[in-house]
Image (cartoon, rainbow, N blue to C red):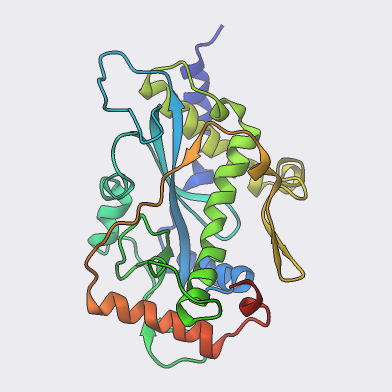
Amino acid sequence: MYAISEVCAAINEALQNYAKTPSTEEEWLSIAQEFNEKWNFPNCIGAVDGKHCVIQAPINSGSDFFNYKSTFSVVLMAIVDANYNFIFADIGCQGRISDGGVFRNTSFYQKLQNNELNLPNDQSLPGRQQNMPFVFVADDAFPLQRHIMKPYPGTHARGSEKRIYNYRLSRARRIVENAFGILSAVFRVLRKPMLLQPDKASLIVKTCVYLHNYLMKRKASRKLYNSPGMMDRIEDDVVIPGQWRNMDRLSSFLPLPNTGRRHTLQCENIRKEFSDYFNLTNILPWQNNIA
């Protein structure tokens, strides 16, 4: 009889090649091309978000793992490509830590800040002149930076430039929401509190991430794993929520706090160029009806 930790460790070792972060410019460009073709967001190389995975109260942990929903959790911070595959996952941070704090403490963030990810050189958006960096799309809980694009804060009038930009960004960013959704829908251990200490709970979550990528990347299992209607889709200009959104889930996404942050003028100009592209150059025929 094998312990669950031994089984998970064996799976992790066997499947770790299915969850590698891109390491070359060509790999990043391939992701960017798919984001543009499938989700109409050029120069996008990933969608980032966090998810609370609920656990029992750890022994002698105090409030370290106690989160905003009054449960105990470890955080899955992840980046997903245009095909719902995880290209980076950091698992195990205490639930009490803010989303920005979790992301800043990851090895990925440190490499991003130190220009160690081998991202492609800046290039202009299709039909535009200004050179633009390749970016990760995120929600309002993350900082606006040169390589991280987030929505404009506040409420904006229907059809306005900022609202359309927010819609186009949200359309690309919801890929990571869907990846989390199908992960919880299939691996039901994530839909209830895990009666394990944080280290073993984190190992199980990591195993689920590896299995998700393995099943998504194999043609023989993809259709069975990702059944029709499971993911969000657009039909006749209307977003149809995926089936996973109707499931009763105790595991939840990180909150979207409305916190003020200072942004550099360069980052604001990058966001404005994306906005101009969506509103002037690459106008989707149905974006005004939705945004």
